[in-house]
Length: 255
Image (cartoon, rainbow, N blue to C red):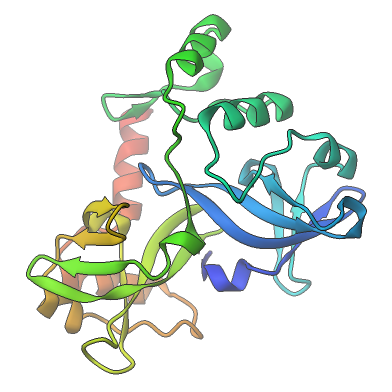
């Protein structure tokens, strides 16, 4: 299901034996735009510190109860590697975290457009890839990127106002763009696939769309559910194939 990130913020992370804390923000991979970690503010049992929870551990979403169930125990979370979420998370931090939980490394397994299964890669090769990986990861915080300027192909158009997340695949499907700098109240969605580049130093996202295309795009109402019909109109307007067709083609290629 597609949902605005604000709907996930504040949800309770529920371990198998108790409540861990509440979701605060999200770290995504700026190469794939996949959510890699949720930052969670713990309750009094851990002094209110922040911990990282991987979406890999999420087993179900309870929208009515506003909870995310995870396949972890509170003891596991308590003993997990301590990572300062107020500083950039390094590749070494991630390696220690993933090793602790027994999760495969998600970087370094891409070749010719195909994903090489981590389970098929020898442990020695994996270790070597970790050693050779840059100390700087490609993690970005949704909170930090919110407010970035949006530059269309022919000039500035607005700023990043939020994110739309797929809570099944944990991918960022769209950026919420506020164009009120130019047209009062208008909000539209832009897919990461349409981004030409992001300047992290200038806090600017450059998209390969014209200002007119964005101006006349289907308006986004964050209070309304995103339907497939709306997505069809959105992709047709911008002249780009929808991501679900691309995913289907990729799965067919890999099979």
